[in-house]
Image (cartoon, rainbow, N blue to C red; front, side, top):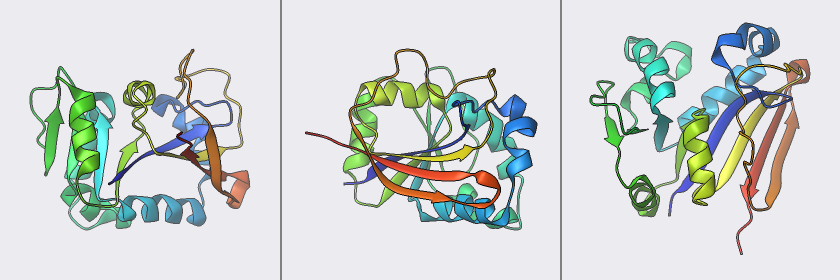
Length: 185
């Protein structure tokens, strides 16, 4: 059975707002962070996005033809699942739109052979999958800044079952890598 893994880049107070990345993400760049992001993308079997994240990333990455940043080939060729009730067309190579009974369809994807399906960002999608208890692991890159404003990755009333810390690592510039597995009964 495949694992469903959330990969999120956030500030210390949980902000993941792409419009504010110049403040909370960019100042903490390092080779070690770049390598961690690259290695995570290369390790997954498939990638899942909510509509907003898909529409933000697809135009940029689909135009890359020389394996830019060491991940363009993987992003362009891996199976991609877009969860959306409104998106009518997904032109990025190997993209499939999932709508309707999303929980059943994602459960079926998890039951297929393979290693992991990685959800990139996509907080709204993550919230619904948290409620359905479909997420197996959370991987956060936490940046040492408190934003106090912007889009929060976790919404009010977001709740998980117990999480078990399975990896923690401090990398350059005070950035933390945190992996949590969902503890199930």
